[in-house]
Length: 320
Image (cartoon, helix red, strand yellow):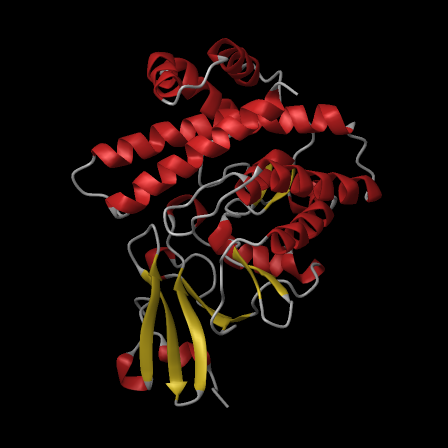
């Protein structure tokens, strides 16, 4: 038995090496601190996660207490926590799910789309304590930035050999004015990129890292699942797979009461995704210009290529 897990963490929110058998870093978060696998004793392991991400301090604890108890077991169990209000000393300990693969597979993405449609159907009013802000700006702010940087954005489109800039900026103006993507807000995971879900060898789906959950447009989660790129979790999204995932989500959402017409839904997703992907290209471009960046340059270059391909694919949907 592992006993009281809190005893393995110092008051300042770091693991106490004098009380554990071994520790190994898994990845460095955007806050600069490591998520780690640690062993209280040989053969017993847990996952230690500092909870210090700017806009989401304490949010993961809140979500585990108030939201995830209503979910099927598609998330790792939280075994211990510092509690809310600890600031930079906040932490949580999760069950260790073992080695998880994050390679893209269509069948796995379809499983996520099915579950996503379910949690999007839950009454958002139940969680009024959730923020409306995720780790990235909302689509209105993204649209506003694209319009403020219209010359840069147009140059990126030109460099990629992509047309239709007038249609893109018209969509941006409508989004900035609140005339697009303004439907009911749903419970959004907030950061559902390729690295934040996995399917085990036994076929069990896990959705990880709920620290950015917030209320948002359903297209936010869909974009992250389908067309969001990540420097450490590359994938190749084909037009066929994109259509399959959107169709799976829409079919499930209709079972839960959604009334979207398929063609309008696909076009609206395409418009949302084009704006988000173009904004991502500007972000990646800025990262590439920095002398120091958290991501390796070759990964950023690959991410830019993937994002450009996704942008082109979503422009097709936008005009369908």
